[in-house]
Image (tube, rainbow, N blue to C red; front, side, top):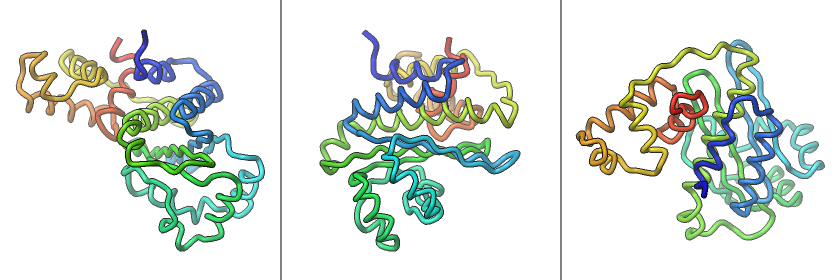
Amino acid sequence: MKSWQDDLLSLTTPGLSEQHVFDKIKKAALALEFEYCAYGIQIIFPKEKVVMLNNYPARWKSRYASANYITTDPTVAHCKSSQVPLIWKDSIYKNTPALWEEARSAGLRHGWAQSSLDAFGVGGMLTLSRSAQALSKKEIEYSEIRMRWLVSVAHVSLSKIINERFTDTPEIKLTTREKEVLKWTGNGKTSSEISYLLAISENTVNFHIKNTILKLSAANKTAAVVQAFAMGLLN
């Protein structure tokens, strides 16, 4: 039986279309009990461009675009500068009450967002939202690891498809040990556990993780695993 990590990583398979990947992301979001999801990326080089994909109600899509809410949306502002997950709440929208009221009227009442920023000038943001039932502390504790994985997979798969239209992908090589460490990391093992499995020190494990993150220009070790898998480096 495939693990949920394997199911998500399958979205990075080369050759998949943008729409196919997003449809799978929507399905994964629904499995986490979010009826809506949105993904946006901002490409800086060679020319700035924003691409947004979502399954929001049509009237909210139209209103968001016509009011140019992307320039004042506090969740977008947060995700441009931080990779800390953000849970929607009234205080976040204290300076944009109209946006908040209209979003809630459209059925977007409870949400969670996180960004993935990399060194190639590409920033991605995934938002999961729903019309009912606020996110509880228990739900976050249980589901956030999957939500974070979904952020990384969405960014790696979709940004790769879109970014290839604008820039060349640099050749990246990982050592055998770096691949081993990433594979075990992808299987959910901690640095301490990997240290035991590979008979090396925990500091050495963390050294290899840091190197792979730098080589892949990844946001964190989860993103590094996803990026390496997508590039076929862990086959």
